[in-house]
Image 1 (cartoon, rainbow, N blue to C red):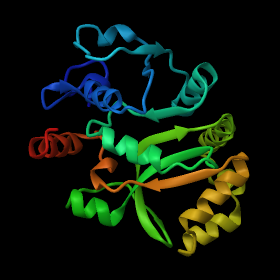
Image 2 (image 1 turned 60 degrees about the horizontal axis):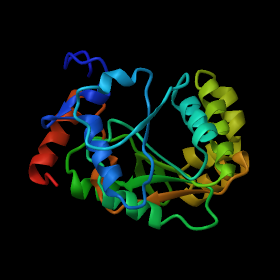
Image 3 (image 1 turned 120 degrees about the horizontal axis):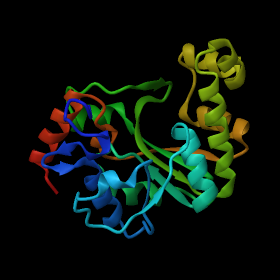
Image 4 (image 1 turned 120 degrees about the vertical axis):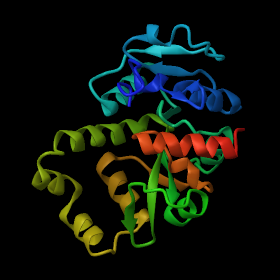
Length: 236
């Protein structure tokens, strides 16, 4: 995506005339629940001259997404809201709805959009779906690491990343019973969260956002066309 647009990083890819990351910063800054904004990037200088309208700090990334989140947790502490620079449609009301849905017992939460809501709000789009017994959903690139216990979830994430090319080891890590329930269509969101919680020693929750557009990020040229089309229909 960056090469096609002749830019150094996908984060500064123009989306409807503005750098993608600037749109994400707009949404974060507009939420009264968000305080300090920190960007994980290896070369902050690439953002120079973009006329960013919000004060930001920078944190060097680690080797991969999970390691970068771990570094942010160790440096910034909790609560820590994490999103991605390619979430060009992000809206402050989605952030607020997400945070409002996290209860006091939750250590870590991830936002999702249900298939029916995606079909309603973004008809015809193709998103990666996780199909469980109580509905299919797609991730929304929005995570809350609410307490220090959420570090256990990132540690589990790192272990899964390490085994991603070894399916048998990954199956052993997640548990054969959980995988069988998934394959046979019997795994629910609650059961998945309970299993992740058991492995990470943390309370984990999946939170369904009411707007299916929250599942749309910019991963490929078709996504860029889709996002720009949606922004023309609803620019604010």
